[in-house]
Image (cartoon, rainbow over all chains, first blue to last red; front, top):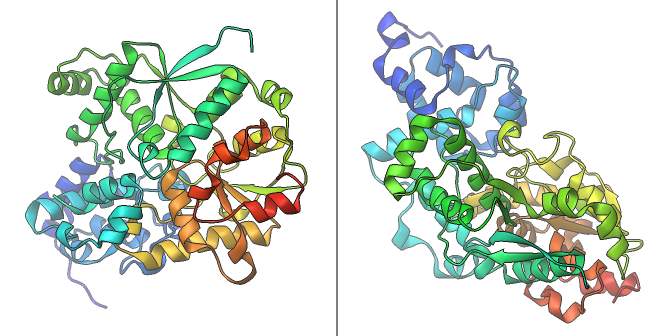
Length: 135
Length: 289
């Protein structure tokens, strides 16, 4: 696929914001792929962790934000644990989630959660889910 | 026991007061049997159940900081059982201790002057470092002999290593060392440090079934007859997913239930009936119950 890149994309303010929110230097990633290899949910991600990092380096924020990847990351930190450069893709995905939740609707409708789940599931799952999916 | 009990301030967290009561009670009883008392904090609130990975999100640190500052008023150590509470409290403690700027903001929110000087210990660490596994071994009255048990660490006890690691993040042994002290035969299995699917239990069952099922299958594949956990969410996900085919029958229990069992507590007090999987057939088969 041919893509057109401009300096404006690569040095965009919004990608800079992802760096600020996540505390990660996106340029550190050299695409070894350990994060995608270790990630337990990459099989279901529309864009796996390694490619998220590369696309953000190239300023392609909108495509990354449109993918389901950030909503699947549970923050298990396997990516960070195995990254030779010490990058936390989990923190980058958290920054993207924060951005998305601030801009638009909640990912989960609290009113729609089934009662059996609320009765049986550990409270920590519900609290954590609210933190990740609700603004 | 005639020696003076060591009292350690204890933070149960929300889930141990509700769907994981057996985790809480078996831990308290076992503590007394090996020489310490878990003194529950008089007042506590939810830790937030997730450490904010975005470093500018200080709001997410206020709830755990409140717990920490309350605990510091009654001691210099805080212990907890749930891996997530442990992870959140310990990481928040590091931020408060290490960043003067963030400490100021968080303290401003909660109107406290907490400095990060608390030692946050997981119950497993208390057993290893304060009590000693040798002493635990000496207190065993009903050895878990002949049980091949897989210790499931999950994520939050181990990662990120520099902040929370109770052991080597890739090759931990603390959990297996405890099982050995209890007389069981620990089984190391590939998925013991892999994620269970965590809070996706709320909205993506497919992921949880796949990941937790892989954990059980991996344990059973290495010969484990029992899986032992340290987190109510791992416990819930593993019990719900079970695993496929022959590994479907592998029971899952909290490590404190295994501990209480080995320490000779009445089986009726260990709350096995609250678990979703049934460990009793295995215990009967091994002549333990």
